[in-house]
Image (tube, rainbow, N blue to C red):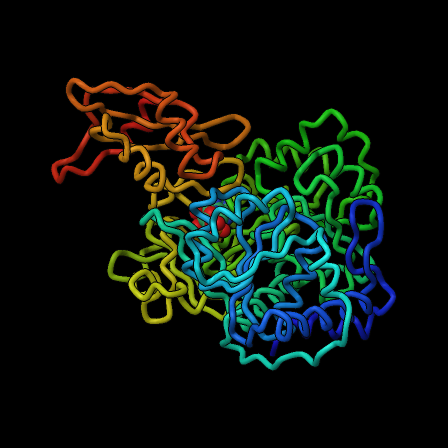
Length: 506
Ligand code: AMP
């Protein structure tokens, strides 16, 4: 089934309900959204000459057009490549080139960056700014029928950076996305028609993935005018639109509960906060529950099994009289309805309860593989099991607690930062002999990035020079906030840098 059927069915069942809203204003009803995407899909095929299976990318700050574009792509049987709006031109170039995208939609703030990026991504033939006439013109003309899609056809390439430093495109099929949607109803919530969702977190990631369960239920999806997470604006939108659901990274939840205007949130305005993507401190969680009520549901997932590995439901959050309530709050909950989850040793054998091992997952939500990257696919998918790279332990009731991130990933403000990517850049400097990048606990962001640098004998380099080098090569948010110049890096007998020791020093 083509995932765009979710919209078609809602266009029939909830025709005049508002589907999309710009801030406080309704933008399109379900029927009008359906009509618009079916006309846009004609343009994709006829005007841009694209065919089913072609990849179409976008780089946009959150806006209603992002969902218009996505559904037009699926309606035409093509594959969407949503890119994180905060990436660097070189990172965009890599994704555009790797995915072989033929067309890229942008918001005006990203037009220059993408124009720069496509110089190194020759597959991209055209860039369309969604605020200009070429985009407006896409709503004019005849609708075309929805393309058929096999369950195994790629629908969404979800690019995540890996330990290799190169982003990898987790290939999510129509079936993966449908399973994820049904899983939302089984484990997270079943939002009623006419309720709302505010997209404050990036649409290229979790918030965008949650569009499906909303679209299928006649929910109004609201895009903040600012295009990002502004707490005061978010509170105003939650008051404006009824029975609101929202996806937030743990640091965003913390910013919400610590905001001076939280008191303005009307009782009952908030239906659900689903949070995840990084660990949430128990103290913050308890605080959030005290201030907001029992509206929180935790998710543990990754791009490779989107939003679906385990969950800690609202009910579980609310079982305050359970003897292991605190322990459970510190866990990531129990396995989702649509997946089987195991904790295993290096050979894939399940370890005993309470013992730590790598988390592996099997089920309908697990990606088909990494786009154009058979080597990485073979490492991550073995005998149908996804090796997550996360480490954890199960208790006797099936609650999974995450212990560490075996890939040394840093999570800052809910966004993953892979040290290797930054180390690769720092190593470009002729004065850098060696370096290692680690995360340091940060009260607001969860972690921030710190680089340990060893300079070559007789050579000199300043933090400002290294900062410039990073700005020239990677997204701003990834660059180290602090540089520690040291004589040597701690290493084990195999010469492997001991990041744990570096973290301890911090
Ligand atoms: P991404 O592929 O960008 O969604 O990142 C996925 C990674 O974020 C996972 O492999 C985990 O390391 C981390 N993560 C996701 N959800 C949680 C959670 N609920 N608690 C702790 N870490 C999480």
